[in-house]
Amino acid sequence: MQYSEKEILADALASEKTATDHYNTFANECVHDRVRNAILKCLEEEHEIQKNVFDEMHSRGYYPTPAADSTKLDQVKQKFGQCVK
Image (cartoon, rainbow, N blue to C red; front, side, top):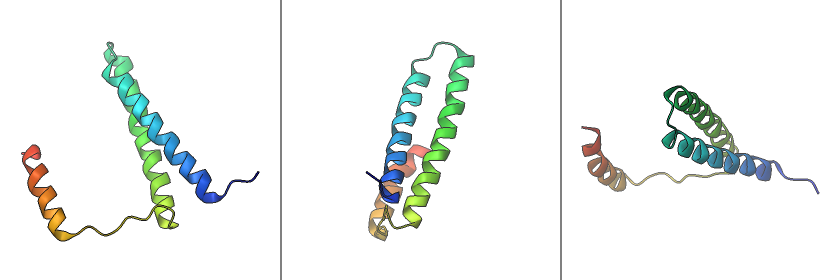
């Protein structure tokens, strides 16, 4: 059986999402600062890989994202803008 490019990329994206979930859990439960910092470094790297895979899928039309409605954008900005302050 041969997998399509889309299936391979989708599997890679799912794997990266799982990896970031696990690294995040490990970092949250880590007692030692040096180990926690190493795990956070791995988490950051995994997020970068995940973004690269997502961008590749998106550019090939495998992960379409519709344009956001400006009204919804304003609502989200208002809702979460307070968190940033």
